[in-house]
Amino acid sequence: MIELYNFPASTCSQKVRLCLFEKGLEFTDTILNSAKGEHLAPEYLALNPNGVVPTLVHDGVPIIDSSVILEYLDEVFPEISMMPKDPVGRARLRKWLRFFEEVPTVAVRFPTFNQALINNFKNLSEEEFANAADSRPLRRDFYRRMGLDGFSGAEIEKALGDIRLTAERMEAALEGAGPWIMGAQFTLADMAIAPSIDRMEDLGYAHLWHSDCPNLVDWLARMKQRPSYDKTYYAKTRISELYPIK
Image 1: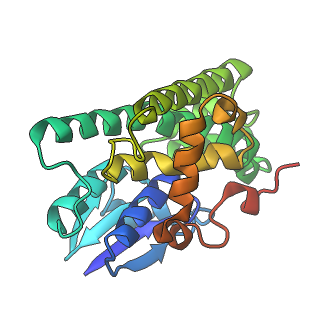
Image 2 (image 1 turned 45 degrees about the vertical axis):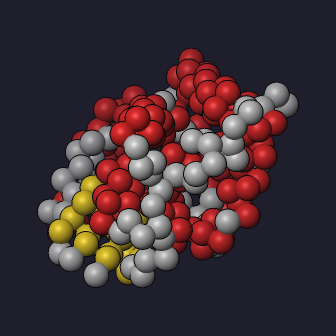
């Protein structure tokens, strides 16, 4: 039995959903209500002490961290393999996963919160907001940096620069190779980064790659044509649907 605790619009949740659908695995899609703080409830923290999504529970055992979940699913359900068979290839894949975790996955949070999610806190007093920040085991400092006024222009520029760096690296990898990041094989790397690129496009930042990264543009179009993509991006899974951008 597989159960996925997640938010529909969470990029980390989306990449795990992509993997589950690509592998054709049946799972219970347990959607947590972030507005009610269900990801911070004691029963959820018992599964994931970081208080973030997603969490995969397989046969009663919780697996946390989206990239760890991707590798776990590929190891436990290898019938449709999404990792290279050779050690060097797997090392190259993990290099991508590490980069995606440390750079674009972090970067997309800044414009996401500034343009949309900060609205969830606009009616709070400073004390109430401080309490909300302190209740988040892994994101306390992130929320404190944001505050009620949002992130600074310099922080947003840094985030956009990191997305641009990601686009440049992906474009170089896809140039003369492709059609996927690792070449001919569709891998966990493609699933790990797709939601971040989709998010930035949804927020109106496709100009960061659209004019001079044609291979990345084509890659994203191919991603969107996969059946797993439609299943992952059901209604109200994009920020623009939840918080119309004016």
